Image 1 (spheres, rainbow, N blue to C red):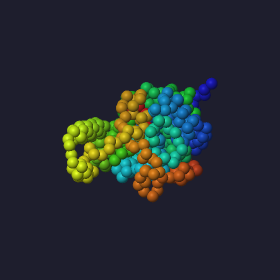
Image 2 (tube, rainbow, N blue to C red; image 1 turned 90 degrees about the horizontal axis):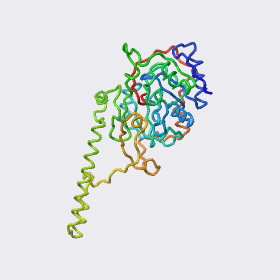
Image 3 (cartoon, rainbow, N blue to C red; image 1 turned 180 degrees about the vertical axis):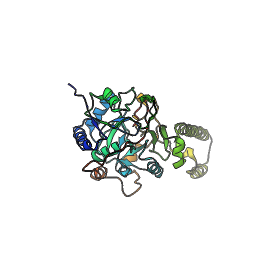
Image 4 (cartoon, one colour; image 1 turned 120 degrees about the vertical axis):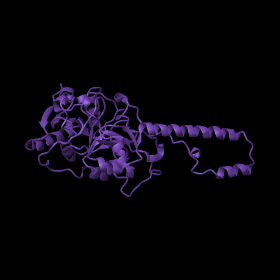
Length: 357
């Protein structure tokens, strides 16, 4: 027989310490909790707990094909979880974290976690919410998805979360309505999601536009592509490759002397795009953030299957890759022994029917 979740105040400093201890006990037992974020309320569990992630997906009615993003308390945790972080991606994180921006990276291959069918990626965000930050400091990285059953609006109050997930979670932190300062008549379906940017390639692609607009992103990184622009580039690339193949086949029907062939081959340069091998279809961004119930097709950035092997993976700086122990030390090393002073809530926004924290 299921037990209804306990709602605890996330704004009362006299009870917050006890509430965090209760949440820590639940997380340690691979259970799920509900926390407020700057967008909507989210259902959360230990990102390193396979059973906890399984319970989170089951509570939402989702499969492993829709893995949850991971919330972290500060940008300093980023290199412990993400691999091959470009300067453009760092610039976006510096500008918009904490805030409603989710960045997709390839995860550190040394980490022992299982968020679902991520194709080796992880979606990370630092929420602009003091309650969430305090919990993340004390509990470590949390796998978090919007607090709702799949197909229903995300909860924007603790009471809405109780109505949908009260039988599936252990503790619900009540931080008041989300987003803060919402207009009169605001409903859960009106909430906007975080913006998602795929950073698994040298081309940064907006796979979902939410609170932060493409125009605002381009003020920081002008080369950011929209989905439509990315698809147009891919179409042009495929057409160029097809044209080159047709040209090559025509050349094979023409007689060349051995010397002519050798000279022709030697004159090909890297500036001839069609002579480069087509990029193999291997990695893709976390499909749980788009696609599935959201009805939004994912963008496949593509990556060679061998890119994560020790022999071929390019290490961009001398801090990577981390061992499991070092990564965990970086991720969990900033835990606090006691909660902070009274917290104030921060603004943000969310959206119906999608994983939007």
